[in-house]
Length: 607
Image 1: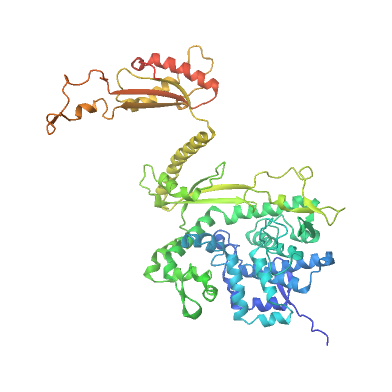
Image 2: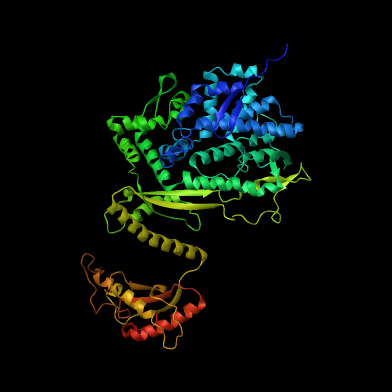
């Protein structure tokens, strides 16, 4: 008896046009667990800035499932020797369709901004949530039997989950970490979530879709990639590669990703709004109760432990808090009311460090404290500091250096792009860090004061950062000279600025004076026996052998005469901040001239 034909369903997608999906994918889509994604914004809080960013995870996953099948089919038709069968194609389609099932409210805001604050010692990723939700979806809707109808088995569920989790790095090309498919099918694991270089259909869809809804140009054409994609053996693994002439096109992929992140996801207003939403969720966490399996109750931060509860958690929690009259939710509600009233925290300023600061999280409290120092009564709690890492998807690495290319003459041999053949017109820096400061007090007076505080803090911070860098590199200020005044100068602190002005005075025979007051550092050191100019022994009491219970100060006639009579001295040291030899020599001449101008400093030279 002939097999029944598979009847697909057609969707009209605004990005890919009319697309056909397998009936098993339709069964998955028509479940409460998948339909939940209609209520989770693809770009989270970006919608509060870009009115076009109203699309949801639902349509993105349909697009990724479609593209996963298109890439698998393209490889199958181009290279029959790969022996890609219908089950393989269906697996990558389902993996693409379900790879974001685990996203929480406002997508990356939930697991990237809220959970790290709510669960400080626990790192939870939405990929794990996607795998857990897929298990729950299949069991709750009895789809295992439907999968059997299409000749799929438990091993296929395993490969789908492995594809969702992404490629596992292995130190040895001989070790194969997966159970769903053998090593000969390694290329299948690069279609949906490619951790080797980031070239995958997930990125293809969200670049096209997000660009369209945001109104930002997308320079990458995924259809062209599908035309040139081939599987070649690289380091003992079968890897998806592209033509050598496509290098510039691949750079367009990563540039577009960076451009979208910079203009939309990391837009200074959308970013602080998302931070405010995360703050509201944090304040509401213990007061939102979600019923899960067995009647157990979960909070916002624990709902991801139970997929029945997690199915109920969507962007709607924003409205739930906003419309609640519960007193426990008052603080969270006020934050969300400020957002919809466009009373978000006010931008103060931002800076890009030349070298990324690795331990910035531990520095945030001290930065806030530094920002609060100033004329106006601003406290550290009045500031919000966001540190943003922007890159091409692989930290500070060039992702193209992890893409393999084949040539027209050697279709089955792929290698990295040699430097002499690669384009020279591209960036050589692939990551940057941005430090943004916001003021939570939004009145004009406070914001203006915060901007002044920022400038003051920046001068102090840059100065201390530069000093630390100089110390680490051995570039310390150079010693010029020192003197011990015959009589200590009591008001030396008030004289420092005048002394620096004197040190910077030009020499009579000097053609050009390049030394300024700020090029000098003056240290005044007071050294004594611990009691300023007093003799500490004169404050001690002594008893004698004859009278052990009677003590008195040492009388002058009994005291040793071979001892100092001066118990304090002052030392004035001058350093030059310019460390080149020419500047240091000039500073020494300036120092001698300055001494002649300050006769009270002419004492013995320090040792």
